[in-house]
Image (cartoon, rainbow, N blue to C red; front, side):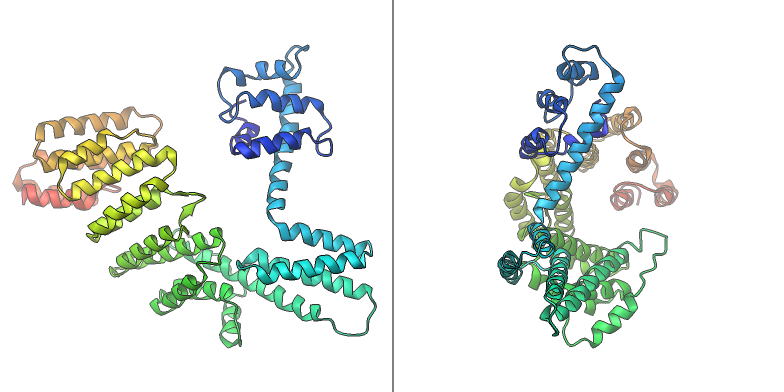
Length: 468
């Protein structure tokens, strides 16, 4: 039962959502099966993890139907019933989060019921809402289009022989919604063109680009995606600069979802330019990361992703921005998610200490790791080997290489693709340490041909130092 679709969905609910789901299940409008209310109450004893002995089907069943013997078929039916309720609840939560959508449904209902006065009152309210709203993206333009369509429907019921402003509003907002979604989709595909081999027909994108180039006015929310798409298509820094200018003007008004998406697209563009040999983009990328962290665009909810945090550390180290990095770690470690905070902070502090050749601090930070994720375990073991080498502690270094290899072989939870770069790292380092100088070129070729291998550049530098 713990691995069922039902429990997988329920585990995604936060504490407040779990309480609200209880009210949803207890509502006779949504649920007419009293057994599901008892089912919810039984599961509440195991929330939020839903694990352990109390989650055995037989035990849960006895809590729902205390006077009956276990019936697997009946249990399966009720799990499915509760799953459907959980899915309905999730849909309602999404629906309720779109306040304008609910209000527009009511407005449409007023038209169909001939409620003219109620229509006019809500129409004025919605006009104020759209005028005051700062975030103008896909759902904004869609709701504006729907609003115009409902106004047009209402106008047609009045049987007037004239043109209402909603005719033009309907056309304009439909166009803007279409342009926004089309260019956003095209930009998303463009960012993936180096990663996927399948060709995607983007349809009318070329015609849209030509149309916008001649347009008297393009709304900034559409324009930012136009220049993003052009920057990716042509690998053009001029288009990219225009995109960044538009992005920075929208930072305060864009929704968290769109703001995060645009910053990640910008960072990805820098990564592509770096791969093409344009090293100046390292600085641009770091600046974008810092902007995205400072304005919380790169946060996921209330927390800073540990992977974003680590990327900032690696970039700052590569650019030798030590003062900036020390301030970043002090300021933003508290923003890491609780489950990753200790490991992400101390592994990255260890990386900084290694760069500063403060090897005692490296070991102190590595000893503080909780190993909440295999990423931290693997990263810490590589850093430990590099630290032993830097201190010329060859005997413990060789011992740790053996221990790391054993860990990789015995760990059944790690996939082969995850293990391979690290096993190749251990193999290469051992080869360097045990080979005579006359075999330097052969060892170099072996390392160059290995793929994938962690820390390849460090290994090649070490080879040069050891064997010449």
